[in-house]
Amino acid sequence: MRLCAFALIVPLAAALGACSSTDAATPDTGPTGDPTISVVEPAASGTGPACVAVGPEADARVPLLVSVTELVLRPPGGCGYYVQCGHLELYVDDVLNNESAVPAIDVLLRKLADRYHDAGPLAGSGAPDVLHVRLAAVSDTDVALADHDGGLLETTIDLATVASCP
Image: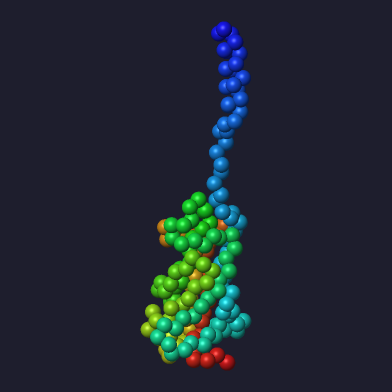
């Protein structure tokens, strides 16, 4: 009797063991190629800053369309297992102006002392009067993201903000 019971238990245990798996599912860590970021619109001209017509409304904005490759944009806390993941921070003259988790972000002109910059020479320095805009990709914990060469994952664009562009 014991031999019959043993003969039934061994194949049953083997069959149950075959149904279980010790292979854990590997989490998707997102893209792994070299990440890049660039401003698509407004496009800077080859000879100077991008010109943007700005009206007098109180909450005027300059929309920027951004292109990212090998980077997942998510709101803070939304990256999970993704390694090359984060959100965008927009700086105007090195002051934080706005944040975004989508490939579009506005320069918030209400946060600036002067919204108009005509790209003409500034008195004293002769440097062009433009808005220096920098977009940086940062992680969930607000740490600057880097490309595969170790350089910061960011891009810059100069904007001339005037009442009407030529």
